[in-house]
Amino acid sequence: MRRYSTDGGDPARRADHGSHAPDGAGGPTAAEGRPETSGRAAPEPPEADGYAVTCTGLVHTFGETTAVDGLELSVRDGEVFGLLGPNGAGKTTAIRCITTLLPVPAGTIRVFGHDAAGERMAVRRLLGYVPQQLSADSGLTGRENVSLFARVFDVPRRERTARVGQALAAVDLTDAADRLAKTYSGGMVRRLELAQALVSAPRLLILDEPTIGLDPIARTNVWEHINAVRAATGMTVLVTTHYMDEADQYCDRVALMHRGRIRALGTPDELRTGLGERRGTAGNGELPTLEDVFRDIAGSGLDDRSGEFSDVRSTRRTASRVG
Image (cartoon, rainbow, N blue to C red):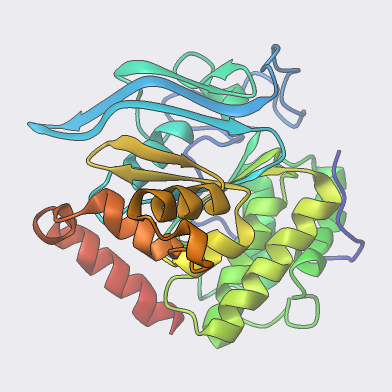
């Protein structure tokens, strides 16, 4: 079991069914009843061949709109993997399929060898998830928010106090743990949500736009905590972001997604060097930026397929709340 640091904490006073933890992540749900191994670690996964996540031929549609179109994606165990693309590219839909929040109607997804369609509970116990929309309850203290997620993810009762304290300490919120979340700054709220995702000691941490709406200092601070926990635990991180500088600096590999498919895959240096070679500028010492690669891949599609109205509204709402 992974550990971050040690600190105490109190269990949350109430549950909030509006949280954004994956439904049934470890606790009971109306549809599924009690999980088959309540209060226990996830069962030992089958051989995953060194990959934390593999998507093969994944297709997901909403009515006549194809959001994910034959997605082929592999995330290596232990790496920080960035999934980039314009609004409407299918990133969040793919993430929600991986987290089992959406079904897998066509194709396959495996998380550490577990089938996301047939072994949903086993997959959920391996995940920590920070959605783009805020999931912290402003009416609870930081400690109560993390304690709530400890219960949702079925952290054993005898371990909860210590685990909550460890998660809060890992993101440097021990001193503010007993303040209401509504008194937190935007960066503190994002770090609180990171603690919520870490309390179950996940093997895979999934972050959907974790620094949206934050100023540069707060963005750096969030990433410093992500990297510190990753270094301490060896967990895999799968992140979506629109900040190309973050992807370039923090991701081991990135995939550029457009119109439901992966259009480019590699390390940031490989992608920038490849574009420089295609442009004939690689030899002059001035490589393109990752943003140049992004624009080269997305092309004119940025103008006419840059997301639905609801995508823009959701992004602006989140940015305004953390800002």
